Length: 138
Image: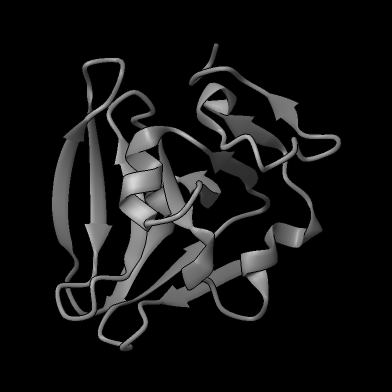
């Protein structure tokens, strides 16, 4: 399948050709700050599958709990979050689901895993059927 997406203003477009992807929510405080919301929703794909087809994203490097870099990519014009590359996962890219086209923000109707549930706001319940991780990989 080919995932396509863009920022809000249309200045940056991307594609990812994948057989499948891991659907993940992350509730860490960095993701909360990054989105201005309670979590990020992500389509986790092989890093080599993502291609920027229009525009040039800006980046911001944040240091994660691991001490490694989380490189956030965003539109330099409208500020939309596009994707994140974690130094901890050098072969994968976390596409921010809200930017995906064709209803894919729904992540295929399921969430495979939730990370940093220790930071999940108390008003949110666990997603039924999703693996629950207190932190990343923990």
